[in-house]
Amino acid sequence: MEKIGFIGLGIMGKPMSLHLLKGGHKVTVLKSSSSAQALSAEGAQLVSTPKEVAEQSDVIITCLPDSPEVEEIVLGENGVLEGVSSGKMFIDMSTIAPATALKLNEVLTKKGVEVLDAPVSGGEGGAKSASLSIMVGGTQSAFDRALPILQIMGKNIVRVGEAGSGQVTKACNQIVVGMTIQAVAEALTLAKKAGVDVAKVREALLGGFAQSRILDIHGQRFLDGNFAPGFKTNLHRKDMNVALQTGRDLSVPLPGSSIVATQMDSLIAKGDGELDHSALALLLSQMSGIE
Image (cartoon, rainbow, N blue to C red; front, side):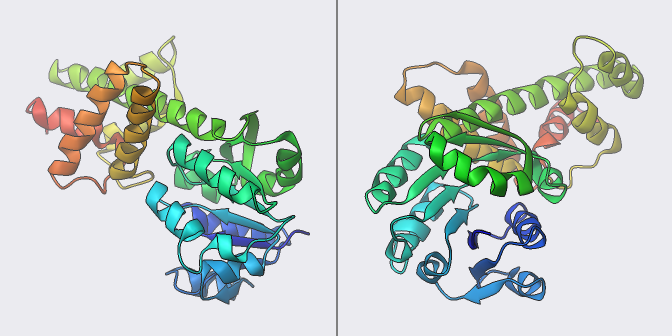
């Protein structure tokens, strides 16, 4: 069994690392994490620096908020780069810019480290149920080595292509999710403003071509007025920025994504960035004068 170092024990990372422990892997984490003691109680080893995590592990996994955090953990003082050696593997499961993924791949492969960018989709629920969708960029040999580890945390695991392609795929995923939430929010807000039974509208749409998991799950959130975070708006806004910047880099216009990002900006400006991204419906309701 590969020894695993896991850095980033947040909403997603904590349950993911717990699955690895229960799967029989020795797991090393940073003692500074707020979840460190809970992981320690399950058998995780605690160390002080990312360098030590890398030294104690065969495979180092990061699951962090954004590109700057990943770069600091890997390339900063006492970072992962200082603790890795030839033959080890680095898997970044954060959602970051494709350009950052390529930079890390270049630096780490020079030390003989196998590298994968492997962002995930499925939110907190998917992390807890080990049913995440994992989109992977990197070499086939690295993917083959990592697959048994990834299968402990996810169900739909696809190697998309070479380094950076996993992050491009995640950007595409976030575009589709964000724009679909916006579409569902607009449809249900329109129905409510028109005085039609929104629950019946959702039921009818679920039986037709408009059916989607987002209409099912987030449509129900709209009915319940429940916007407790499964995936926070401010994190999805960060992901939309990754998508928009990638579009600019490649001269691809993303007009729909720009509109959704602006709506998310409005939510964040109102102080609602910690709400679930389905709170786009809440914003539209407020703009429409609906309770």
